[in-house]
Image (cartoon, rainbow, N blue to C red; front, side, top):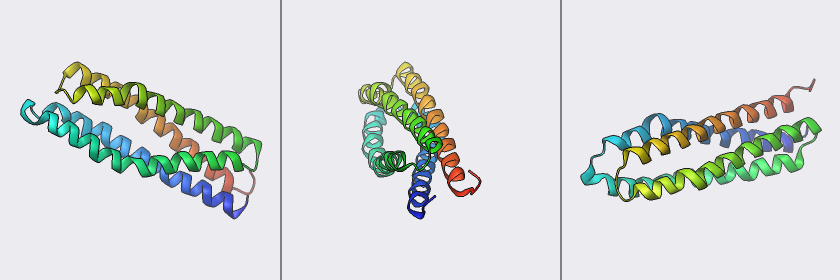
Amino acid sequence: MTDTWLAFALAHLAFTAVMTGLIWMVHVVHYPLFAHVGAEHYRTYQSQHMRRISWLLAVPWVAEVVLGAVIFLLAPTSTLRLITFLAGAVQVGVAVVTGFVAAPAHGRLLDGFDAAEHRGLMRANLVRTLLWTIRLGFALVIVWLSVDPRR
């Protein structure tokens, strides 16, 4: 493997790890607290959450996606190409759940807290959390196969 390939694979692993850690924090800590904000402050809280979390997630998520595409295109072996393709397919799943389920739920929650909507958001986010955890596994395998000279 070339040094360039390994650098891209390591950068991809780093950004995937950041996103996986963030999504686990959101799922275990942040989203469950939505139910405890109180009706008086909930709309402001939800609006501020959406504004602030978007900025926090935008850069590492874009970097992860771009680096995933780069390592797919530059994959030096068919095995690495397959694994990066599968990791990309999982990323598409994250994007679909985000765009078609989680983001619309956040939009509806701007009208005020709704327990059923919150449960739906938690279920969708569990799917995203598990998918990102799978991506992290793929990223680790990609690096492992890239640094192990027997591979």
